[in-house]
Image: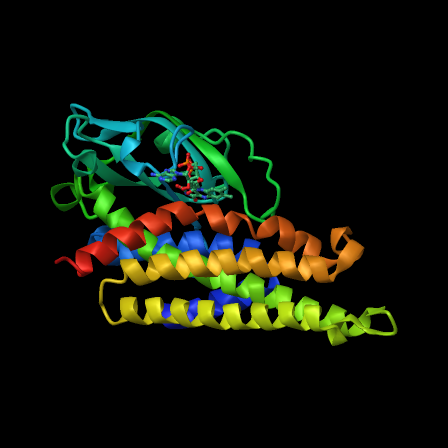
Amino acid sequence: MGLDLTTYTMIVEELSRGWISISGVVNTHFIGSYLLMKFGTDEQKERLLPRMATGEIRAAFSLSEPELGSDVQAIKTSAKKLDDGAYEINGQKMWVTNGLMSGVVFVLVKTDKDAQPAHRGMTCFVCEKEPGAPENTGDYAGLTVPPKIKKMGYKGVESTELVFDGYRCPAEMILGGEAAGLNKGFGQMMDALEVGRVNVAARGVGIAQRALELALRYSQQRKTFGKPIAQHQAIQFKLADMATKIEAARLVTLKAARMKDAGERSDLEAGMAKLLASETGRECVEQSFRIHGGYGYSKEYEIERLYRDAPLLLIGEGTSEIQRMVIGKKLLERHRI
Ligand SMILES: Cc1cc2nc3c(=O)[nH]c(=O)nc-3n(C[C@H](O)[C@H](O)[C@H](O)COP(=O)(O)OP(=O)(O)OC[C@H]3O[C@@H](n4cnc5c(N)ncnc54)[C@H](O)[C@@H]3O)c2cc1C
């Protein structure tokens, strides 16, 4: 829709207040659209963006592999140039959101195994595929989607592996074109992840907000020792801490979004937002679960689902440890003596 990131952040918060699975599907598609809008050639944009905007095709992005997630530079999936100018991709990817139903996957692979540092030898390929097909054929032969990974929560989102075995990608489908995009994929993906982190932060705020609402309602209905549990100070303190942390997480998330909208580098702020909001989401869900007592453990209560959904936010788009590494590094860069 061409909205700014700040507006999008507010939409994601609201979607996540309802169901974070929906925001996961949308968010991954958004990252693909962002990559194309920012780095794509005119031909790539024309070929894909209109159909992506209407929802006719869904996007996925794929960095992680069975042996790596945080350490992106250790990617093993590789592409080699064939005599006819196309590239052949081989390797296995892991944890691909929208893996099966997507029609286009932005895949980061190694194109120069000797590059030092390794990130200078990585390229993002815009890989088209047949939505919903476990075995791709014809133009997309050589790409298999194994059965969906079974998960603890976040069940409305499909997470799959992708197996590339002789998949051919035309050189013009290197993100940004061969001349500009070859071996530039790492930087493109890191830029998109900054946006992705703001989105995950908004999801953390949304799920935390929902947990607080459920706690506010339940604590005024449930009575112990002759009064609603909301009238016990220990419960009020939990509610107060939840509301305060949610407000802080929301503000830092909006700040990161506004900076990106203004064209400023926001890696530090996006890292802070992702760290604070995802941890706040997890913490508020747990506090709300405690307030629900035994009923929180029952599938009849919404908090049970939130309890299984929230931990994903601590992992996706960079774990809390990785966010702290980004924040620490950027702080030292900005305050060099
Ligand atoms: C439901 C779901 C959906 C996902 N969707 C996608 C997707 O669409 N596309 C995609 O590419 N990936 C996706 N991922 C993968 C996700 O990005 C990775 O799981 C994440 O980056 C962590 O990588 P890892 O699982 O390999 O953990 P590892 O990198 O192996 O880390 C294991 C532990 O070690 C810690 N650690 C690692 N390095 C350090 C260090 N230097 N210092 C301190 N601690 C460290 C980590 O914080 C973590 O606690 C998804 C994951 C899940 C669960």
